[in-house]
Image (cartoon, rainbow, N blue to C red; front, top):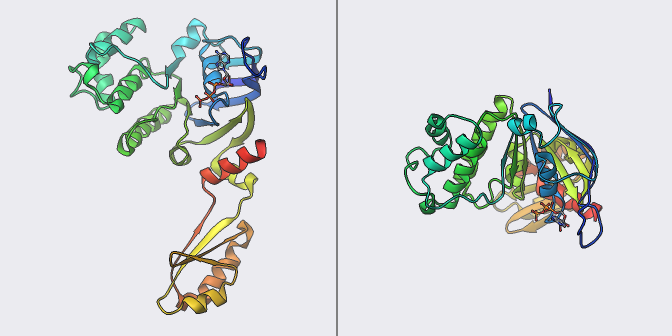
Length: 300
Ligand SMILES: Nc1ncnc2c1ncn2[C@@H]1O[C@H](COP(=O)(O)OP(=O)(O)OP(=O)(O)O)[C@@H](O)[C@H]1O
């Protein structure tokens, strides 16, 4: 079931310095349980898109539907939750008090606060003032707030920026659980490696325009970037391996070269034929970093 639909969305700010649209004819849909990442340079339009979805700012053209409802309407607000990039909380309140406050605002029961804090791993610190929390703990308060009422769509603006690797992983584990229960997730991020591993679909914005959209496999196919082959020679076999792979360059004791995706089996056959000279090898597809850099260069 489709939860979010953007059709030809355009947003022009009245006071835009450049006069260019912050979003220009963007179309996108997200189904229940789908995790979609929004990528783009600073100023590409990610936050603007999120604010339009939340109904915080008016659109200039196009349409947005949240399970059939207009953004910002009472029904849409009940279906959507939001975690801003830098959520601010009152430092004198405890985590429990802050979540109870949000529960009251959202018409929930204050008794649910501890279950929410437990879900994000904050139950032990629930009685401490937020002013004493680390950045990661404050981000978890934000996530607990966003979990109120089992949202159908979660909108998360750079939710893991500033989090350590373990906290990031735990954060995505919670998002995976939510997606498993049918929540659609739209998040923006500059951390491409985590997006690569933890989302289903990627949308790339550049200067307000949607320049790519699809799964990582789709984007990889469309970018048609080469694979990187690297080999570590057996000791004493360097020269023989260089002779067998004249296209390869030696860096820090390893030989590497690039090849087209459809040449992979030929390269594999050559590696097998030269296995006595090879101690180890690796064939790497282009990473999301490579694909993103390629698409951004092309869009610029
Ligand atoms: N209130 C505003 N008034 C005028 N222009 C704005 C306003 N808010 C954003 N913009 C412009 O709209 C464009 C898109 O900004 P937006 O904040 O959506 O980008 P972003 O992709 O979220 O960037 P970042 O990664 O830095 O958060 C930018 O050119 C920005 O200067």
